[in-house]
Length: 383
Image (tube, rainbow, N blue to C red; front, side, top):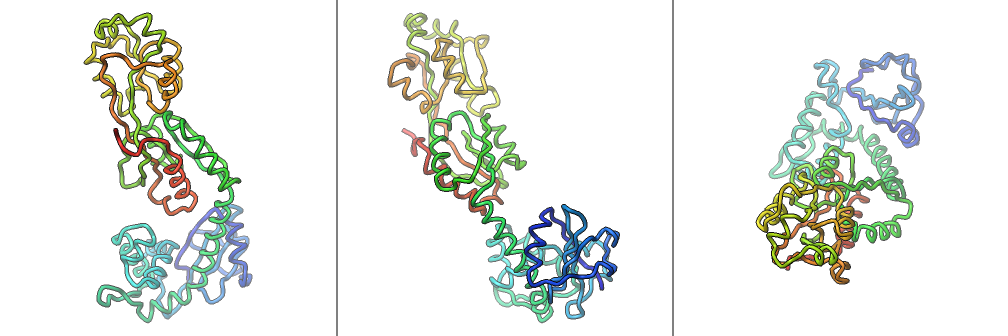
């Protein structure tokens, strides 16, 4: 038997359960090896008519081993680097090309680009040593060798589709979602969580509150699943949806204004402590430009990473603050916070919900992003 491919995954028990259906035990006395000592293989099962077996190497790892048949060549005579090119991604790609009839349609279905699809097929065909598809008009058709290969590999693909389906079903009814959010979103974020708890009661959450830049950095390296941030979201790796707009306002407590305002903005700002989000925030520059135009003293600038804390400081008479209009709406209506007279107010800030682009096809991630849009109380348009 010739080994011509290998695939590893930590989901041993689940995969063994799925692949064991209609499968037969395969003797571990056969010399199965590809950089693996045969003695390490504790269990192997053969998927009938598939040209593959699943071999347990340890409690947390298994290898999917393909062997060659004359109908589609033997890669064992090729370079060792081509051996590794038969993997599930390439196999799945071949199936979707065959089903949909074109590389373009397969790229859309798999959320990737046509060049990436073409590269996968070049790897697979090089590993097998045969041509799987030929172009016919704007589409493609399977060659005779391609039909034979996919017929033999069909059981593998079906079993792993079943495994993926079982994992998605389990995640839809439970699991943990990691959400990063800015302080401003806290005014409506609880409503979104309550609605998600109603729809998916078994879902749990890890929530981090931080500045937008830091939240997006964690999202890009997959330390978060969802990000709700102020400011623009850029990059091909991320997918985002708009949540609305909020305006930053320069305010102080009624008590602070009574004690310190004498009718002159320049004199007022020369001595007033100024509170604003830290320099890492994308609207720090604009906020400081406004306060400097009014005569603010740079020595009195105070940075703070938590807007809720800044809100409490300003509300308690600690100085002048640049705060979210959504966050302080009730204070403005009650008169406990007041706009700084004669000072130009801040600009509008657009908010977005974002995820890693590849994660958008996840049902639960898409559901949370849709729920964020529905729950947002931000203004849909600027005034």
